[in-house]
Amino acid sequence: MVSKCHQASEVVHVISILIALSAAFTVVILFMPQVIKMLREAGRFGIDVHKPEKPEVPKGGGLIVLFAIVFGLLVVIGITTFQEQAEVHEGLLAALVSILMAGFIGLLDDTFNFTTRTKIILPLVASIPMVAVSVGNPTISIPFIGTINFGPFYALLIVPLMMTFIVDSTNMYGGMNGLEAGLSTINSSAVILYVLLSPYVNGHTITTAQTDAGMVAASLFGASIAFLIFNRFPAKVLPGDVGRLPLGAAMAAALILGNMDRLAIIMYIPFMLNFLLYIIYRVYVKRRRTEYVKFASPREDGTLEVIGPFTIYWILPYLSKNITEKRNVQMLLLLQALIAYGAVVFLLIAYPLGVGII
Image (cartoon, rainbow, N blue to C red; front, top):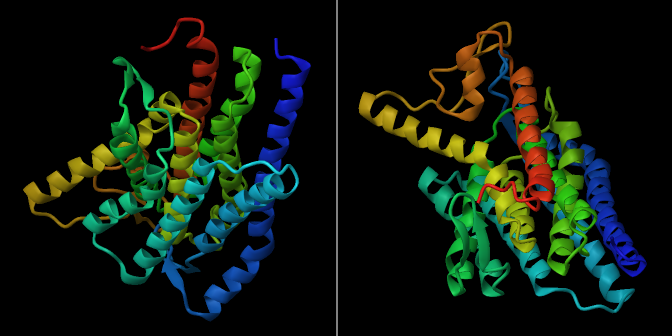
């Protein structure tokens, strides 16, 4: 059982998480309408390609999402520093810088339209702050392999690879109204649930690392669910890479800070499959000497037509001719919710009982 002292400590952690969530949510809700108006006036539009009429939609709303995530974290850091006179953990500051760097890379990509190879490599730069302060626990558990202590190679190899993969895969697994924001909302809420339920299931207090992870995930959740209000079908604004890359960076930072390696592995199975399908498609295009197609083609009735099951979000349209963009996104979000929340339940209950997968 968790003692009263520990319960009081948990309350403080919960309050910090709620503050970060509320601050980020409020920023997006208050400022996104004005941002949409400013994007329209500046002529910053993107083509909403999965609709028959191909409407032009303001693009770049992810900038306010980036600001909201950072603001949510800064509010909690400020309260911690000035009210509790406590030291802010360097890992949390490193995560903050990494998220900002990911946003800057996304902004550059939106401006200069980098090549695919450059887009894949650049997120490595965003991992530098996390590497510099050696964030995370070098001892991780890998399904079907076991527990391994990577020592200094964890910070030098695992952290940058993990962050780069999550940022890149988040960017790749998108392109439909509400998909990126919806996936981010589900994944970040799963991390929050994992952090808050851990002490009641395992009988231990929330660790400092988990608290930091929870605050990052809470800021991400607040910004994502608020942005989803404007980005869901039919989208009033598109995120752009300036929004997609920080979503991935914040998620990676939360998972690394909280030492949630098993949760990350299970949660990102669809993202890994999507990446593998992309590689297969690239090989297919090269061997067949056909044109690479990035998006599905909408029919007159709004249903989607694809050339093959070469991404996760093309599988349903490939199997059925009755799948619309909205329906496709709903099914993909349902799949991710089952995986993410199922992973939380499994790791908190089944694994400690000896029914783990290692």
